[in-house]
Image (cartoon, rainbow, N blue to C red; front, side, top):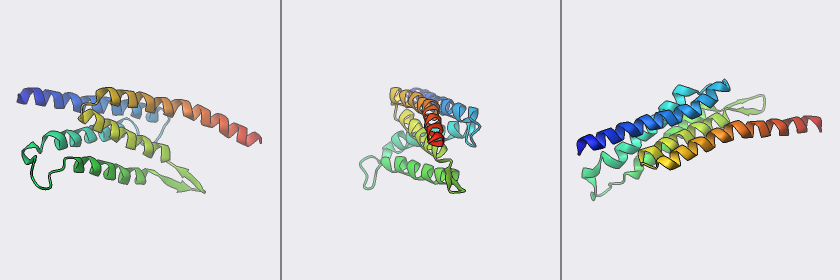
Length: 149
């Protein structure tokens, strides 16, 4: 029994790191400050905290105050703090907002993996990369039209 839980948890942590790296690769390719390591670690850490929350405190189940969702909510708070440090205001422009949002999504992907929502995690990773790639192209087109007007 322990071996099954352990091997499943190790797989989850590995998958979360890989999915975080996929997003990190796109950000690294665009020369953004948060890249492969940041996204992999955020996703991996979120998965680990989620696994610990879901399985590590089973012996407290039924106790007053037992609420495994508390750890999940604190992941969101912690990532919000991390994201706030990524966002910069310079010359009346906001920079880093997309990076902060992608870090936030990476944490959610790690949480999904930690709860064994593998399809949701993989789909969200692919959708995130598509948004980062293709909407950048759309935004560039919009910016060019605004400059012409």
